[in-house]
Image 1 (tube, helix red, strand yellow):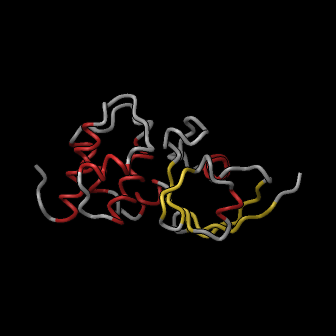
Image 2: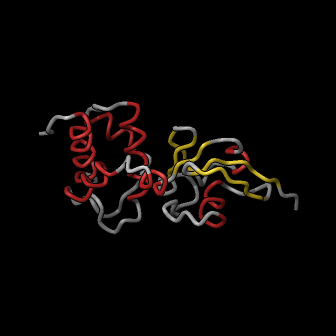
Length: 161
């Protein structure tokens, strides 16, 4: 088996990672770099629990070949926590009881961060669309949608309804 060494910037840190030809970004992040917020849910792109940002774009790490991220900047929930850029979103999830078992939460938070970066004042429909790739079995989605609405309002300096 031929290995390749990838050059990645993960959560602000440059790193070299040897990978096999069939490795996914999810495997690299979890198994080699021990970034456990990148969950292993369905491993088929259907649940969103492995959501990360690649060069600022929301992507599913389980469907992304590791080699496709060579030379890219990858941000996981751990990186968003280190920069404190996700704190208002996390606070809103807590206040709205949007995190119950917590398995989907990292992917939901990363998806929310990606949404609010490109659209600071999303409509309810835009929130629903942005989170449509993330499954939650616990909340029924309403607390999550409300948490995103409140986070958007807090970040834009106005109160939500």
